[in-house]
Length: 187
Length: 187
DNA sequence: ACCTGAACACCGTTCAAGT
DNA sequence: ACCTGAACACCGTTCAAGT
Image: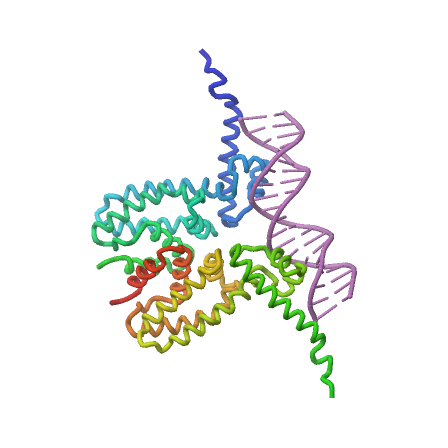
């Protein structure tokens, strides 16, 4: 009993398309790393050896490309936050997590800026796509607040925006972070 | 004894050029206000009724245009900081000044972002042109630090970057500012 | 000395034509 | 179903030709 070819029409082509997608993501990561987040989709297409239209089929906009590249990181950050959710020291856990976030944002030139812009624009795809990580961070924040280590008025959105600002500075991150902490910390 | 025409060659033309410059600045301000900081120099040229080349003659780059528009504000901020330099309460003076800065940054959509980017790039014209204001702010900061109201490790650059982050948030500025203050404040 | 606007390179985006 | 690449709109930037 052969599987109906209409159940998965064009399967081989679909897998080709999937390989194209993976290849494009790979190339995008390379070019982001080499030239920052502002590379042209045309350049990604050329380097991947496909037509521009193919890029736009998979990633209808430069932001969609960035979002696809970043979604792995967002997921890793979400998982990392979840793993820290029952740490002994909730405030230290939050800070560790913030350090990871900032380090990730610093990986590609232009990323903190793009990401911060997206975070101020609810219609952005990046904004929606990082909500999982954001929610996980919120849990971390709330625990730290309940433990009395962090001020109760602080909201995740505000905290993430400030973290982005630190990531943009690129230098003195640890100093700025400690400054921020003494700001939001209670003791 | 007529003034040598070679001393100020083409004086009348120069004043025309000056008027062009003023007109371009005026139009730029209008378009910034209407459409944000990302307007095309071509659009400014068209609306001002001059050729693109004229815009580039006066402002060789979009950033130069923005810098020219902002330099008045920078100057006003510098003067404002100087006026507050001998206030009774140095910490309150610093905070007042920060509020003004943030309000100014919020005037044009896209300005906080551009300005923050410039502040992270020493080769930027905006970076150099806002140094007067920056220095004046530094005096304000130092006085507040000497009075014991602000942590001594805080540096102007860091403070300004954080102020920009607050301006980008556009909402809850007062809350974020108070959070920041309790962070950098000592008492 | 200054202005004009055509021209070029470049990027985002679309779509008719192919397979 | 997916891919290609020409084509269009748009923006930054330059420069030969005008006055």
